[in-house]
Image (cartoon, rainbow, N blue to C red; front, side, top):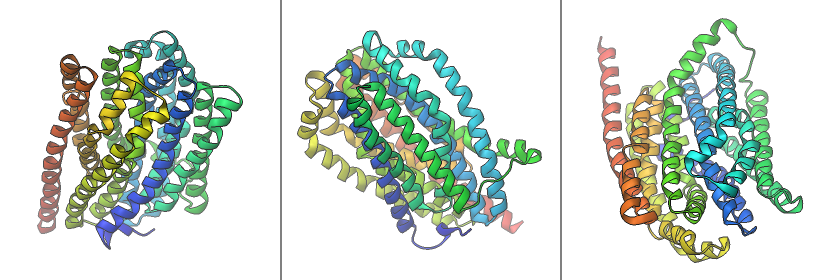
Length: 447
């Protein structure tokens, strides 16, 4: 079990891990976008609005699973950095138990409160009924998604970029094949899109477990005497990461709530933009998953100059990537409007995003990087504080007053400004934290 990231070019490690992750995520997020495209062909604005409302809730479940996988990857990467395979095997087994124990009760609570949650978001009438149909199929697959994403976290911690990519490619392929069959051939419409998503999650989890168990032999029997201590250690890292990731859907839910005051057309436009964002900026989501294991392995090896380099090279990557992605969106705007066959306010919102507001992802990407470093450098509470700050103080008042003064366009402006403030503060605090870690290590070496 080799710690690959403690030697060689940091920028190369960032590029290789991010590129492989991007390919998989683009495929996966592209299927979500194709979902929206297929459903838009049905010609019902209520369906697009339903996806927008349901998406706010499902993004909560996805963010919870991402937080659990971040905790898994961070913990295992540090053990890998020390070269301790037996401990890694035991901890991975117990982490999977903890994930199931977390996700199953969450499903029950969400199913019980589903209708009330949608009403809080502003869903009414047909849009609310369709959102409920969509969610009631997908929600029970949350534990499957949690285990699948944890497998990806393990593979990234091991430096297995290709297999981590293959996980998401498989899920995307299954979803892409089944979508048109279930939506159109079988006539299940929005329910068909939901069933296809569940099938994709099953495939992803099955393949991930096969690699972890058969290829790496990193899953064993539960050791009852060490189960409690391992779960406690895991949640000391995972819980702040979960809180960090849950802050994002809280912010999104509030933006959806504000948009709902402008009608179903505004929510439908936000839903389309919400599907465009992860496709265009998948590289930033992949980057946040790549820099964590790189930093964690170097922390385990006490190589602090490489941790600083990881931060700085990642910021360069963010700016360069966003410049290219925003340029492509700008050029593709007329094609996107035609493809989704939208008009009025819905089309305007897509234009606003593609013609400039997509640059918000420079600041989002910077926050992704600093949060990933915080989660992997024993400062997960910082990531929680910054993400909740972004979702609350950095989003809610800006979105509210932006919507009051400038309508849906003003909401975008508010979120843009809040993201910029959080990003700048995050970089400053992250650099200070790395310096403190280095000073602490030097002090302990002399004592």
